[in-house]
Image (cartoon, rainbow, N blue to C red; front, top):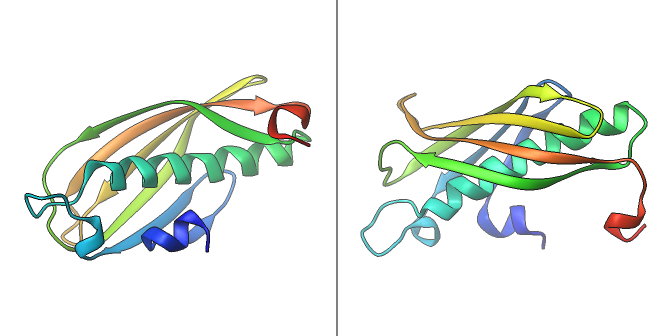
Amino acid sequence: MDFNELIGLEIVDVSEDEVVGRIVIDDRHLQPYGIVHGGVFCTMIETLASYGAATWAMSQGMFGAVGVHNSTDFIRSCRGGEVTARATPVHRGRSQQLWEVTVRGGDGRMVARGQVRLHNLTEPSPIGG
C-alpha cells in the first residue's frame, strides 16, 4: 500500500498543466479537536504539485522533479465530507518549478492553499537511479 492509498487520496486527473485530487474525510484525518489535521492538506498540496511538476519535467526530457519547499495556509476548518485539491503551475523553468494548490470543501469554499517549489531532476542519481 502506498501513502496515497493509506490516507485515501485519489488522484482524479493529471496533466502538465493541472492535477486534481480528492479525499473523503473520515476519523483518521481528524486531530483531537475534531477538525481535519493540517498535515492532510499539506500532503495533498505536496502530492498534487509533485505529480504535475514531474509530469511536465518528464515531458521536457528530464527525470522528474522533487519538492524543496512547501508553504501551506489553513483558511478555515473542515470537519468532514469530501475535499478536492487543484494544482496549477505558476512558473516552470530549467532548474525549478513553482506550483500553486487550492483545497476546497464540498461546499466549494477554500479550506487551504499552498505553494510548492520543486527542483527539476536533469539526471537520475539524486533519486537513486
